[in-house]
Length: 65
Image 1 (cartoon, rainbow, N blue to C red):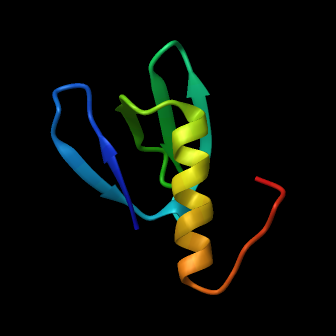
Image 2 (image 1 turned 45 degrees about the horizontal axis):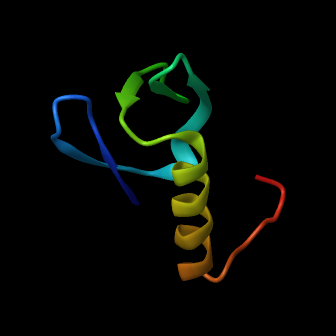
């Protein structure tokens, strides 16, 4: 799981395998495969780095993120 920060400064752990899309509007809106949307403070580059680190920790890495 990756740690993200909501706009009200609370933290949330998200399973990156459930992320369907991410859109900067200018805040980053993550849409999960369930349809739930989460607005977070991090930008897309930070989230990409967190996902890559998470996948490395599992022994799986795909450069095409």
